[in-house]
Length: 173
Image 1 (tube, rainbow, N blue to C red):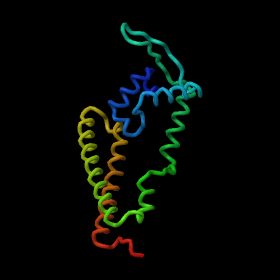
Image 2: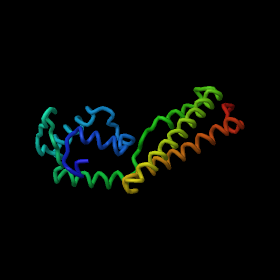
Image 3: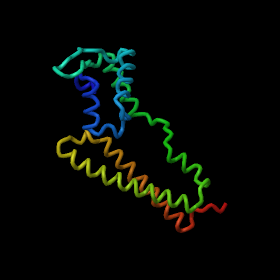
Image 4: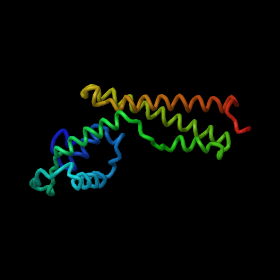
């Protein structure tokens, strides 16, 4: 966010929520932002631009990105976009141990997951439709990715439930 303009931590948190970036970055608590700011300051990637005090408000520190920070950000972005990371999400881990549950328990849990994913997809579609009235597509690209992942997972979960129902996936080895 500091690549856009200098700002204070509270403004960063506001923008993250307004832009729905809290869907892709865990900043539920303001303390997370402050911890990140401290690390970026320590590493010389950002610096304090000014300290402001409005009438009845507490003092606020305004931060700005440094030239080294801007270069580091650009390199980090190129790496993140070009190199698939080895991630360990919970769902594939749960699938790896599916036989711990009974077939009925697994089917019920997957059906519940399917309903939750369908609700998330509906909510996302609604939010994107609203946001696209004032934001350019480039600012919604992570939502397009999220939608594609949701659709793929919905399809996988539905097929797995269907296989459990038909008996093509069973615990009989």
